[in-house]
Length: 139
Image (cartoon, rainbow, N blue to C red; front, side):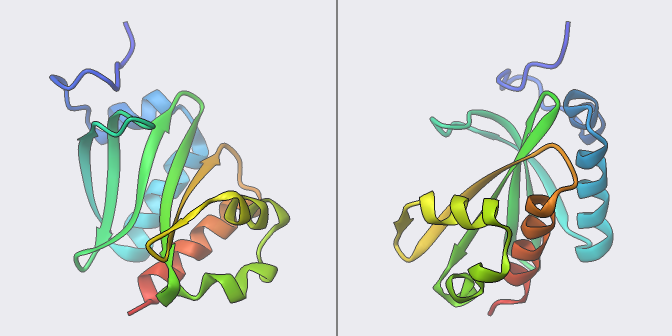
């Protein structure tokens, strides 16, 4: 029987999550976050209606960089961007796919919660890394 991400009584290890996703890109992303940011990785259970289950919260210096929601064969990265990141003016430099995602995500309290599905090293993946970098560097 495989890993059940909705089983609150069983907190999975990072190795179990990596095996569950089964994607070299997930491994690449995780390793990048550890090497580039020395991110604090916390596996937490979320009761969110739209994404219940175990996820990875990645932080640096007390600031959230992103939240990763493992799926079988791919993963979703939540990056919250607001006015201080000034992403709106940079959006023309991003891929068409990211621009569409950004435009289709409603703004609330001056923020957009971008849910980015990733399964391959595409321009969308590179854009996601760039958003995380912008988020890290914003004050």
